Amino acid sequence: MPTYDFHCMNCKETFTVKMTVKDMERAKLTCPKCGSENVKKRISQFNAITSKK
Ligand SMILES: [Zn+2]
Image (cartoon, rainbow, N blue to C red):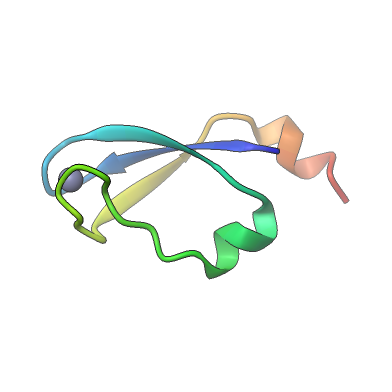
């Protein structure tokens, strides 16, 4: 399962979330620290995503 790194634009918190690509499309991501939806995704394992077809 790929891991995604997120950076909260609100409180500057950085957190990691493990989920499938399908979940990623549906999930509503919020910062675990402040609950803001203003988070920016950073793909950390690009190979894991592209190889999973
Ligand atoms: Zn936050």
